[in-house]
Image 1 (cartoon, rainbow, N blue to C red):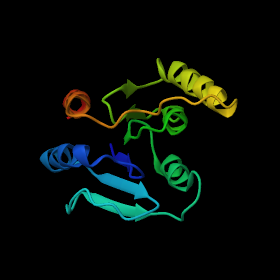
Image 2: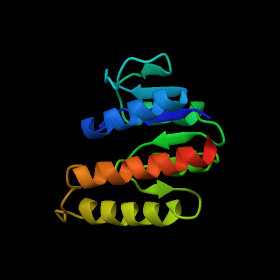
Image 3: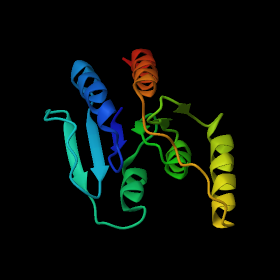
Image 4: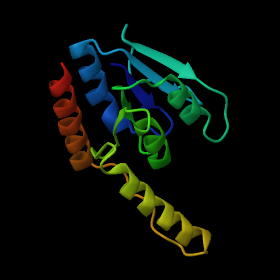
Amino acid sequence: MNLYIDGDAFPNLLKPIVFRAINKIKLPTIVISNKRINIGVSEYINYNIVNSGPDEADNQIVAMVKEGDLIITSDIPLADRVISKNAYVIDHRGRFFDEDNIKQALAIRNFMQEIRDGGEVTKGQSPITQKDAHEFANQLNLFLRKRF
């Protein structure tokens, strides 16, 4: 199993949580982004910078991911794409996505996008909180304990 991190907009609050988990279980990790980010220096982490542009990082993740891999992203369309390859997703707030719940999350996301496209001003997501980071850590640990 590999861990893929959608590095674009990856919250600083989650970096130490992920870094500890990677090193604790020696988890091969690929961080993909269109700009340099740093989660930490580890023999288990590879950084892959892709060209700037919409969905460049997403497309690279989809091209590389294999069945059973874990992806960390808050991008619901990306989550849907990798789940179709039998991978798993945890978002930045600790929500676990799989084939049982991704379609509902995608439908809600698309509905909200239609509302925004129609000119309605909606609140964006609030910043990641300590509570979100705690939920993320719990979900990540639960997922990894089941597999290692």
